[in-house]
Image 1: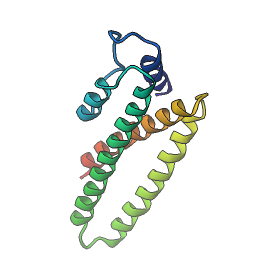
Image 2: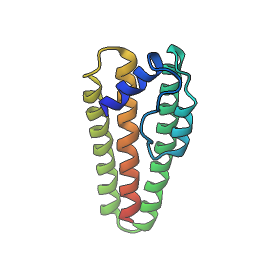
Image 3: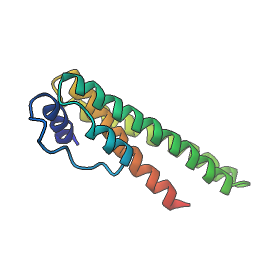
Length: 134
């Protein structure tokens, strides 16, 4: 992940406009947003906005999926409690892991991009896992 964030920042600041964009993320809205990022210093802010919007979409989808699972577990309070505790633990892990990944970056823009990219990637994978679980 770190190399992708470095590639994003480098592409926005130093690479000619005809250069290739980073690999597709699998999130079509995120990919479209990133494809329209200006290749200037202003583009770094745009990339961060793209990742923030993607994280919001995924967080909303995660909350909806949790509600679906809880509804399926209707009378099983023990499983509902386990899900709630597991989700809180998972969110803590995601946030700490992504903060750790970001520490490898030298500047604040790259750290933020790496952290956001990590959160989006891990959250999307977790959403897929939840959907597959029930």
